[in-house]
Amino acid sequence: MKNLTDTSRFEYSTLSSFKGFLLEKNLNMRFGFHISIAGGFSKILERANIRECETIQFFSRNPRGWRYDPLDQNEVKSFRKAIQASILSPVFLHLPYLPNLASKKSKFYRPSIDSVVIDLERAEQLGVPYLISHIGHRLDSSEEEAIEAVIEAINQAFDRVRNTIILLLENTAGQGSEIGYEFSQIKKIIKGIDAKERIGICLDVAHAFEAGYDLSNQEGIDRTLESFDQMVGLRKLHLLHLNDSKTPLGSRKDRHWHIGEGYIGLEGFRYLINHPQLTHLPGIMETPRNDTVEDLKNMKVIRSLLE
Image (tube, rainbow, N blue to C red; front, side):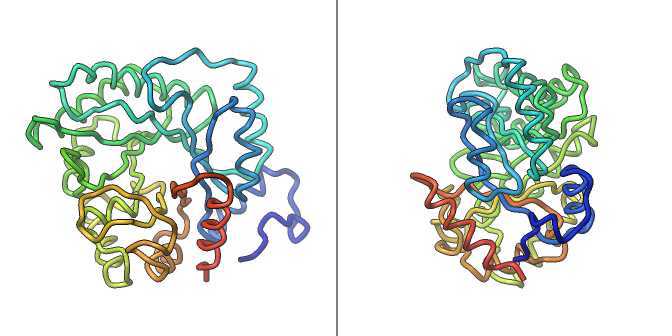
């Protein structure tokens, strides 16, 4: 891979113009990881740099709880300044794990809508243009009831927060009562959203594979992208989650694994990240980690596949 951070090869007045060049020229897919916010937002950039990230995602708060504290505005200001001075682009916020937009019967349905509202507001404060959300579990609702619940939840959240943040729905593996594992379900959800310009998709390749879309070879990838384009539209695709799968095709079991070591394999990822319809997208890895070593290994592997 070319060393794109070597600005001596080009003439740039600012790092922001460098970021604009990278995106405009569509040189290669940009890679990154989910970054921990332990210790505060001030730690994000250092952790991203250690992992050689070009793009990142992070939580704005504890992902396993409902409680949250207001953002420290001094910390927010410092974070925005640091990100703007870096080459990290684009940057994504991820909704916590607990919200479930797909079941009105759940006592957590209203708190889940509130969670989307809070993070739409936080994304704007942090200067992050995208918020990623899991679609949810239908529990004992029907599929149609679940889809209607997701539509209503998003429309309510958008009515309460009228900003320009794009909400990215992440496809699921179809584990348990998850919905959003078929592109046809995602199509129905988007159809019901009033502010369609504020909705997009984050395609998790492990989830898609586990849901039955074969991304391990060229034929399967081309067929999957054609289906996605017909059902949803590739213009709605803003991000790839680059995770290999520890479980077989169609397993409906959500198990992320290291790049090239799972059932998608190296050749699947090689074709994916070099596909002409995908190279303009950022790719964020959520691969297993105990420490930085695993992330650096996965970054080395994914970059070795660039052509």
